[in-house]
Length: 380
Length: 140
Image (cartoon, rainbow over all chains, first blue to last red; front, top):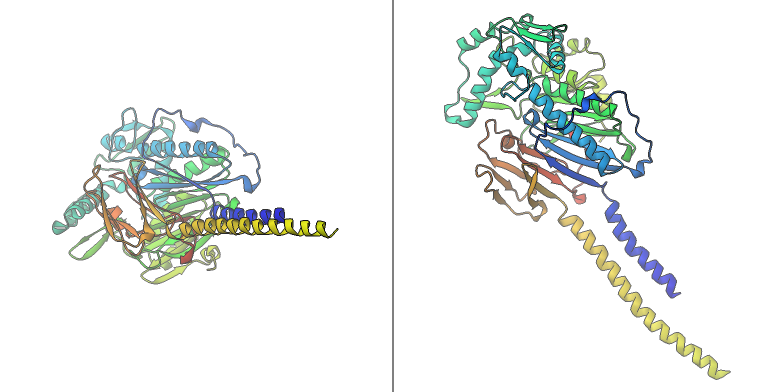
């Protein structure tokens, strides 16, 4: 009798403690801001590794941050059997983010690295570039065509004027200004994508217009996230997600919860009661939102977004935000920016040339979406 | 025969009273354990962790419901404010774009805000089961 009672009581205590421990998935966090360029190049791995199959109950959820690359915070979620497996993927992502950041940087020089800034500095002559840069620039040239000229990597000279105005106006709001119209017009004469030449055989990029500057800001982050996601899959990544400043790419499904990944769509209204306007369920997809809720400045009471329409050389303000779902994060990034610069009707027409891409438009409290996007929306 | 019956009954009574004592003690321990873990789960699990250059430099308990400012010697231009409504936000910074400030208040587990130029990161961890918040993995 006594033994039975004791066993009963102990089990009550044990259950009370266990229910506590199991309420949440185990989460381990790591943050880092340091780049370690001395590590070996991991992209030399060939062939796709298939991870050992394990029971979902053996998997743990790990979360970690990398602060700095692409001037943003990258959060990653990794489902792994142990800390070692997680750290291997984390280090790969951290290292690749910094490597691509340096290659695609337009502001800084790095010793021993030929990057986009090198090409800009040597405008007028041919520059031998790493393959990653040739790939990105070809993606950019193709992107200019696919976006009907709205996303143009050759627009650096125009974007530079807006970038300076935004930085100065943010630092000193009392003296906020927008770029001089004549200066914008002069700069816009040097933005023809046809003056960007890629020679695959020689491995060179040439800006045939000396006054042209490249700015890959609209495509580089999404493009990089896709490259890293593919790299992870090749390295035997089980499941997880990368979020580079709102540029989300999920790999596989949430095996631990035996369901899809749940991604919130950010509410562009600052400090809104409801920080997410929608939740989507996705597997092996990218969810990318373009918006002007964070990168903007105010001049004479008017708000100026960082998304500059080449047609007007001024910020495009058709929408507060546009989100795109498709597999490739680079395409999602390109398309969401493009859709910010056109009416929804024109956008829907453009979408017919982007198979597998779905869109979601936000203007104030008004929300519209393609039928296919609706299929991703989680019932609440 | 009668003596023997008396003897067993005596022993059984003795065991019963000690049983009761152990029982009460164990129930008390189990209850205390349960309430301690239950209450810490509800009152102190939602925290904001502040990182500088990848190092954890401050843990802010958001459920305390107080409003206060945090400043740090490593970067005097940064002010982080904890609000009474259990949220936290960057209030000042000398960075070029002020994206940290424009990120606004964050309050849900998994949300984060950063000042990349100043290498500051705030991450909300833990969950508040009473609030009925919807859980998402990430926000795009």
